[in-house]
Length: 390
Image (cartoon, rainbow, N blue to C red; front, side):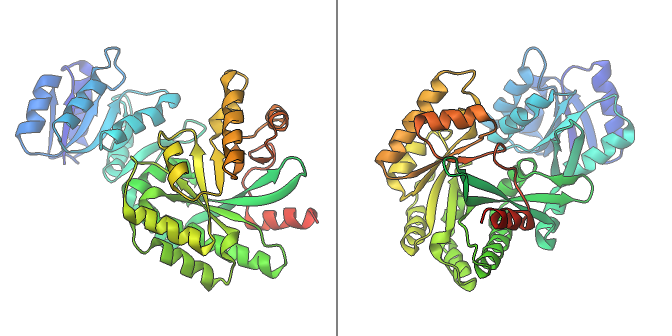
């Protein structure tokens, strides 16, 4: 591997260069100012691990990455020199990902040598993420692949409630990674890696199999309930997707109508007959389709018109902003009217306090999902809730 530090030859950059040489991972370590760094990347044919201050006051680091992308250059991964605020971590990662580069987190010249070495070793094939306590954690792509292979995931289900009757009307299947180094990680911390490394089908298979087995056990107890499973639109480019889903449901002798697939879009709109064919096959079998995170994707309305959805899930940001943005209530009311006119169910995500519930009652919206009613629970806890509700 080769390291390229972008910037002037300051004491900090020189110190970082010395440490990168000392850890013995890189075949070469060079420091170049931006115009020379770009020339080097374009001319010498090496694939660099890039170290750059992305949050400098001039924001030139961000512009430099966009410039590299414009020339279709390839990088091993990108590290930010310094310490970024937790609130910016996901934004920086998203920015770098949009440029088709891999973001591996922050590197500080003041960090101990061993810490820098450990981070580089793991960041070379993985990425750096942050947990809620701002403690830095990392994992490798190989660890993630092994976790999928070994079944190192914890499965939870978040209930959906009818706020008028108080009844539990459905569940959303979720998965967390029981990481041996960092504990239980929410999907938000590794989902980008799942998507970017073609692991979506394996991840879905893991959740879907566990969920169907759980639904089967509930059916045998006379407590069968609707369960929603998240899929990404790119999975519909697999010509066997619908057939595989249908066969899987048949294997558990479940009714198709007890399964809902929530369609999310984490990529640009894909216009493909294959996508539409899979959608038609799923809907024709009786499997319910839901459009997830409605109101976030620019193509939400387009999808709603062309796909046979039976449900809309309104993104949590709308209900969470009702106290700060007076237009939020208008937006929720408008989506509810749209759902009613199209004979679709509307589930509001992110319902976390009584003010959210009262707003929903005021506008006549009855289906909610959020921490006010329940956090995600394990299958045994869900069974207890179902038993207590009888």
